[in-house]
Image (cartoon, rainbow, N blue to C red; front, side):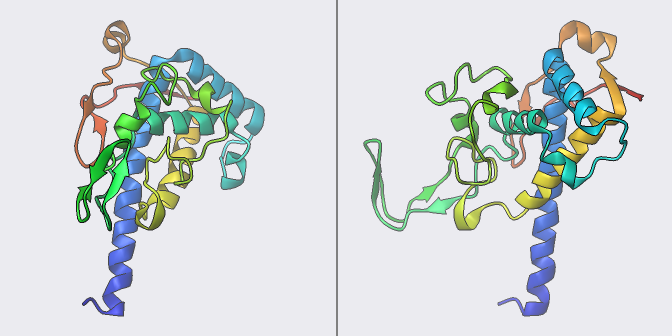
Length: 214
């Protein structure tokens, strides 16, 4: 049984490991999708210019006004959840779900990647359409089961608060402080959006992009 002096460092290690890896992967996916979808990139940058004006540094208090940026992050979480399979659960009692019996003691893995691709839940699920989240109130913090990138309940990812804050800040800063374009060969062939499935869902081919400071 770990002592109290060990529990806090272990918890903090889990918090920062879970928050940093998922944040980095999500920002890379978001940038890849925006570079592949110039209209979404333009809308994101127009919103930043309107909200921020001449202000250079983005603060936490600014994020609540960036509605389109929030929609971009949600759409990225839907298409590319940081962890495609949530932490395992165990059924405490035999349960029937849509005609299937889950026996007591069974280990249950929730495939949030498949939920995000389900055409019964999402119109044209293969497309990157942030606007879908401007039309409906939906949260990714475990209340709406259509969007559960960090899980829900007592076993929700401990790094979610850090990842939530850092993804929005990093993405907003990258879009506000730089102009982005693809290298000529990548632009010609398109961004490779194939995924490397593992504990963290990352791009199989690291994103290449050219940044010009503003």
